[in-house]
Image 1 (cartoon, rainbow, N blue to C red):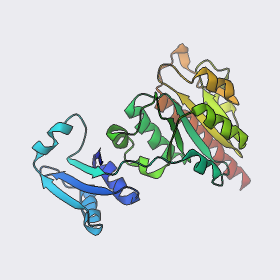
Image 2 (cartoon, rainbow, N blue to C red):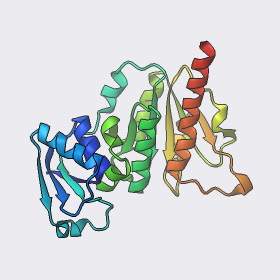
Image 3 (cartoon, one colour):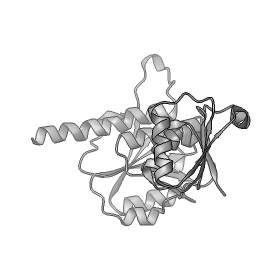
Length: 249
């Protein structure tokens, strides 16, 4: 069964990555042609993928999505295997673990942030967490094709295996004593656990973590959603790596 992806960026990145089988691309006759649209058509021709120009009424059922006049029928994403990921060579690698994130837009934004920051993989639980869907793909702007998404039955087992393999585990929690920038993220493999929008990281995972960190807030006003919070933390890890690299030079 095919999935549906929406929007120029999502379709273009799926074509460029070559990791997903695209069955058909539908393009609205009313679409404003630009460089991305022309690139999509060129790549489709090169790869023998059917694309059709259709009346805008064909997009009525997708009206709630910002489809930009382009949709594609694509093979479902193939989730990566955690044990296979763990067996790969890792040096100063990073992993993001999501504990009960429920909003598709947040997951898509997190995927996009992780790709931009060079994160090596994202772990999601098979239950009580949003799975990859059309909204996630659209929000990620195609980034989902550039990072392993690992689906597991037990996050507790994942954390245990990571620690057994010399990974450091860092959980984000608003009530933590330490600030996220006080941890040295360089020269180690680490995983960052981000919790659900309302419940946060579960107590069992907090207990199993090596560090628990928070993002300090002015006026005790905690308004960051999970994707915003992850961006702050993950780009601090990037800053530290870049700074250390410059120091070595």
